[in-house]
Amino acid sequence: MTERVYLVLLLCLGLMCPLVTGIFMDKLASKKLCADDDCVYTISLARAEEDYNAPDCRFISIKKGQLIYVYSKLVKEKDSGEFWAGSVYGEQYEDHMGTVGYFPSSLVSEQHVYQEANKTVPTT
Image (cartoon, rainbow, N blue to C red):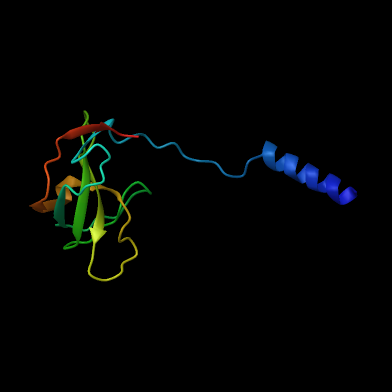
Protein backbone atom coordinates (compact mmCIF):
# COMPACT_ATOMS: atom_id res chain seq x y z
CA MET A 1 0.00 0.00 0.00
CA THR A 2 2.77 2.47 0.84
CA GLU A 3 4.39 1.74 -2.53
CA ARG A 4 1.21 2.95 -4.23
CA VAL A 5 1.18 6.13 -2.15
CA TYR A 6 4.79 6.85 -3.10
CA LEU A 7 4.02 6.13 -6.74
CA VAL A 8 1.02 8.51 -6.71
CA LEU A 9 3.09 11.23 -4.99
CA LEU A 10 5.88 10.80 -7.51
CA LEU A 11 3.39 11.00 -10.37
CA CYS A 12 1.81 14.17 -8.93
CA LEU A 13 5.21 15.81 -8.49
CA GLY A 14 6.08 14.95 -12.07
CA LEU A 15 2.89 16.56 -13.34
CA MET A 16 3.36 19.69 -11.23
CA CYS A 17 7.04 20.22 -12.04
CA PRO A 18 7.71 19.37 -15.68
CA LEU A 19 11.37 18.72 -16.39
CA VAL A 20 11.26 19.52 -20.08
CA THR A 21 11.01 23.07 -21.29
CA GLY A 22 11.19 24.44 -24.82
CA ILE A 23 12.59 27.50 -26.46
CA PHE A 24 10.25 29.49 -28.67
CA MET A 25 11.68 30.12 -32.11
CA ASP A 26 10.28 32.84 -34.36
CA LYS A 27 8.93 31.92 -37.77
CA LEU A 28 11.33 32.58 -40.61
CA ALA A 29 8.46 33.66 -42.89
CA SER A 30 4.68 33.54 -43.06
CA LYS A 31 4.50 32.30 -46.68
CA LYS A 32 6.46 30.00 -48.96
CA LEU A 33 6.53 29.21 -52.66
CA CYS A 34 6.05 25.59 -53.71
CA ALA A 35 5.45 23.55 -56.85
CA ASP A 36 2.22 22.11 -55.38
CA ASP A 37 -0.21 22.80 -52.52
CA ASP A 38 1.50 20.32 -50.15
CA CYS A 39 5.11 21.27 -50.99
CA VAL A 40 6.07 17.64 -51.64
CA TYR A 41 7.26 17.92 -55.24
CA THR A 42 10.84 18.92 -55.96
CA ILE A 43 11.24 22.41 -57.39
CA SER A 44 14.89 22.17 -58.33
CA LEU A 45 18.29 20.62 -57.74
CA ALA A 46 20.90 23.00 -56.31
CA ARG A 47 24.63 22.73 -55.60
CA ALA A 48 26.19 24.16 -52.44
CA GLU A 49 28.80 26.82 -53.23
CA GLU A 50 29.97 27.08 -49.60
CA ASP A 51 29.83 25.11 -46.35
CA TYR A 52 27.00 25.97 -43.96
CA ASN A 53 26.60 24.83 -40.34
CA ALA A 54 23.00 24.68 -39.16
CA PRO A 55 22.39 27.06 -36.21
CA ASP A 56 19.39 25.08 -34.89
CA CYS A 57 17.10 22.14 -35.65
CA ARG A 58 15.11 24.00 -38.34
CA PHE A 59 18.14 24.13 -40.63
CA ILE A 60 20.36 21.57 -42.38
CA SER A 61 24.13 21.64 -42.60
CA ILE A 62 25.54 21.52 -46.10
CA LYS A 63 29.03 21.09 -47.50
CA LYS A 64 30.47 22.75 -50.58
CA GLY A 65 29.70 20.67 -53.66
CA GLN A 66 26.74 18.77 -52.18
CA LEU A 67 23.55 18.51 -54.20
CA ILE A 68 20.31 19.57 -52.53
CA TYR A 69 16.72 18.88 -53.57
CA VAL A 70 14.73 22.11 -53.10
CA TYR A 71 11.08 21.68 -52.00
CA SER A 72 10.06 25.22 -51.04
CA LYS A 73 11.32 28.80 -51.05
CA LEU A 74 10.36 31.12 -48.21
CA VAL A 75 8.91 34.48 -49.24
CA LYS A 76 11.33 37.09 -47.89
CA GLU A 77 9.95 39.47 -45.27
CA LYS A 78 11.49 42.83 -44.27
CA ASP A 79 14.99 42.31 -42.85
CA SER A 80 14.92 38.51 -42.81
CA GLY A 81 17.26 36.36 -44.84
CA GLU A 82 16.18 34.40 -47.89
CA PHE A 83 15.88 30.70 -47.08
CA TRP A 84 14.92 27.62 -49.04
CA ALA A 85 13.88 24.22 -47.69
CA GLY A 86 15.45 21.07 -49.03
CA SER A 87 17.30 17.84 -48.37
CA VAL A 88 20.84 16.77 -49.17
CA TYR A 89 21.23 14.32 -52.05
CA GLY A 90 24.06 11.81 -52.05
CA GLU A 91 25.17 8.63 -53.80
CA GLN A 92 26.18 7.09 -50.49
CA TYR A 93 24.57 7.09 -47.05
CA GLU A 94 25.11 10.29 -45.10
CA ASP A 95 23.89 11.29 -41.65
CA HIS A 96 21.65 14.10 -42.90
CA MET A 97 20.47 12.57 -46.17
CA GLY A 98 16.68 12.72 -46.37
CA THR A 99 16.35 15.29 -43.58
CA VAL A 100 14.46 18.36 -44.78
CA GLY A 101 15.56 21.72 -43.40
CA TYR A 102 16.26 25.34 -44.29
CA PHE A 103 19.46 26.82 -45.69
CA PRO A 104 20.38 30.27 -47.08
CA SER A 105 19.58 30.49 -50.78
CA SER A 106 22.65 32.68 -51.31
CA LEU A 107 24.92 29.69 -50.62
CA VAL A 108 23.61 27.53 -53.47
CA SER A 109 23.20 27.70 -57.24
CA GLU A 110 20.30 26.01 -58.98
CA GLN A 111 21.55 23.35 -61.39
CA HIS A 112 18.24 22.14 -62.78
CA VAL A 113 14.69 23.47 -62.35
CA TYR A 114 12.10 20.67 -62.45
CA GLN A 115 8.97 22.77 -61.87
CA GLU A 116 8.19 26.43 -61.28
CA ALA A 117 7.44 27.43 -57.68
CA ASN A 118 4.21 29.27 -58.40
CA LYS A 119 1.99 28.17 -55.48
CA THR A 120 1.98 30.49 -52.46
CA VAL A 121 1.33 28.50 -49.29
CA PRO A 122 1.21 29.69 -45.65
CA THR A 123 3.98 28.31 -43.44
CA THR A 124 2.98 26.24 -40.43
